[in-house]
Image (cartoon, rainbow, N blue to C red; front, side, top):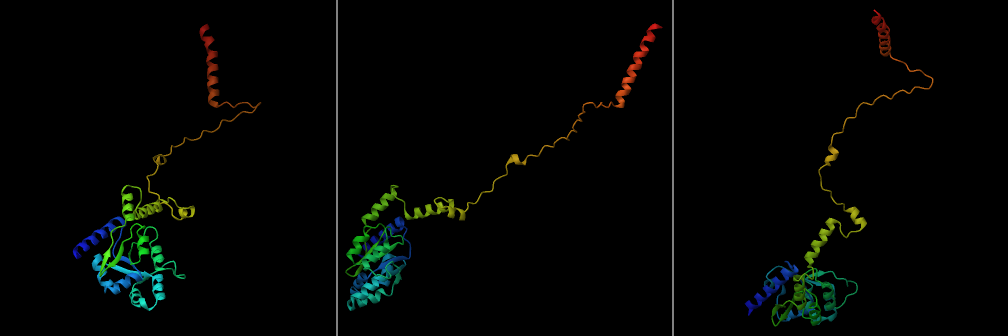
Amino acid sequence: MKIKRQKQAKKTISFYKYNFSFREPFQILVDGTFCQAALKNKIQIKEQMPKYLMGEIQLCTTNCALKELETLGQQLYGARIILQRFQVRKCSHFKNPVPASDCLLSMLEDTNPHHYFVATQDHTVTAGLKKIPGVPLLYIVLNTIVLDKPSQASLDHVQAVQLGELVTPAQKQSICSLKEEQGVGLGDRERRGKKRKRKQSNPNPLSCLKKKKKGLPTPPLKKTEPGEKKKRSRHKRRKAAAAAGDNMAAPGVLNT
């Protein structure tokens, strides 16, 4: 019977590890009812719980659970001594304590983001956490600790994720990190604070072309004012004189 119970616990733990990212050390929220049942059945929680779950554990409780045992008086003095040895996790009811059942359910929120196991004998807590996906339940039957099978809410959640209707918490975290890297969904101030790094690119080939050498500027032509005679160059004057001499010599040759 013990071997069968151990196999069932191993199968259930694997379910939560694979589908809800549970990791060691397992965090176990314990209330006064579980400690009272362990005291009555002579169960050493710190010794037997790691063996049953086959891994390291962290036993913890809340301030509201301790306050509830204090108000109940001497009948639960032994359970209060056991519960005081565990780590106390902060809850939102520090100034105004609430019943332990309400406090434990508030610690789980809607999706059990901190991956808590819950160890309780309270039927109110049991009924409430079965509506929350991904919450392993531990309770005591006679003198043994029992890990309950996954609830229907957990099975429905896993099926919805497999069909692509939901996104797992791990996928949400990876999506958020990618959005932060790309600057998607951030405000103007956050975008200014987180500038995207530009990749080094090759220079534009058109900007690397050599510049063409411009020709020497031609001097502007001088304009002659009205009434001013143009100056003729000496070379032109000589040509004109030689042409006139040839015209004078030509008639004499024909007469002889």
